[in-house]
Length: 142
Image 1 (cartoon, rainbow, N blue to C red):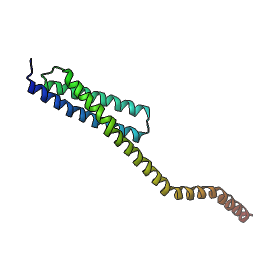
Image 2 (image 1 turned 90 degrees about the vertical axis):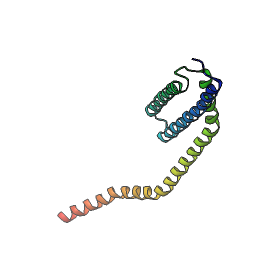
Image 3 (image 1 turned 180 degrees about the vertical axis):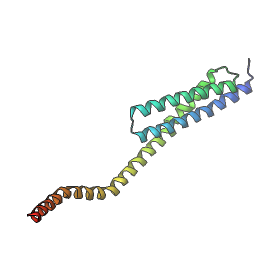
Image 4 (image 1 turned 135 degrees about the horizontal axis):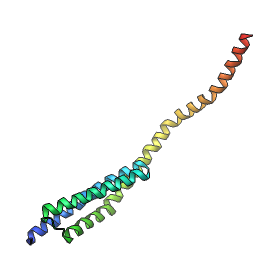
């Protein structure tokens, strides 16, 4: 089935929006990856979920916009927008997320350091105190 030029232009512009949506999902998954500290299994699961989401989104897009026919210009528009957004705005967002995570972990270390130091001192003193108590108990028994 032939599409008119207006229909092709609309499909092209909607493909831009789909590429933007897919890039947003990928950036969200990248943030989750950063939070998971690059464990292999969660990264694999996220990659599989993203590929499935992209496949379903492209299938539904082709079905609704171009009568189920995959058009090259649609794929080009999606890929171009995805690449443009990911390598500009996406990089900035991911850098900001990394900075925020570093700041939060630094603040947590600053807040928890006195507590950790105190608990380490207390746990070091427990064996010493228990030995002294054991010696006193033994002396009192005699």
